[in-house]
Image (cartoon, rainbow, N blue to C red; front, side, top):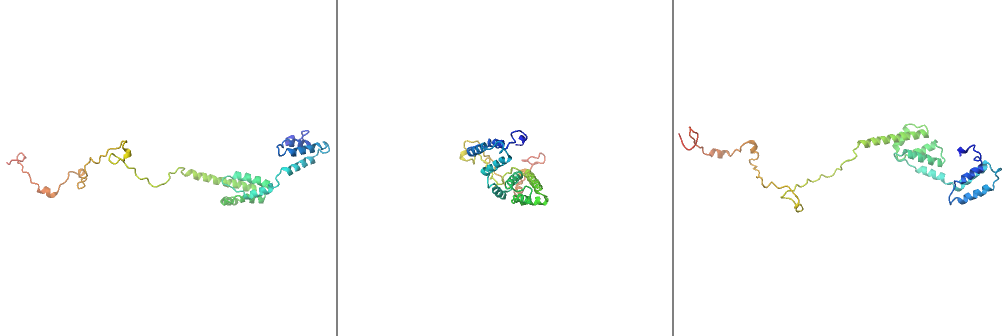
Length: 243
């Protein structure tokens, strides 16, 4: 309507009512619109074309279509409104909309107390905001935004240093059985398995184990002493004859 200021015809209260009625459509309001149009046709175009006629139209519209319990409903919604981290912008938008519908004065002490009441589930945030000594509602709102944003940044930094994927800690798995030609189960008959080579090996000599590393095996001392000495020739160093 501000764009039409000074335009001849648009400043007429009766003309403004007629223009407003063109935007009110629907089966539930058609009867009311028709009644208003009949009343306009009965008005004097000169004597009744005053601002009082337009204001009377607005009061009639509010009486028929405005919610009479809007203020009480908004007050009840404000009492139940709660802040959910980190949606501070959504909380402020909803709070101020309900405060206007409840006809509270934005910036009053009562409004500031209701604003802090919504942080009942985040007392640490309220404590940090109050420590900053806000001067009014708008300062309180800006400090609350700052505290919430800082808390959100700290949480994001902690999550960035924590591994995202961690292998669950469970009981250790038992070692897998190594099958060969001797212990393979029946369901592996048609599969290739390693040959069992343990049967072709000599059993370890535990008495002389490790002797191959340390040199030739040393026999029993008594047996070695009882073995007869072979006499050899002094000239050719061969047994069987004497010189």
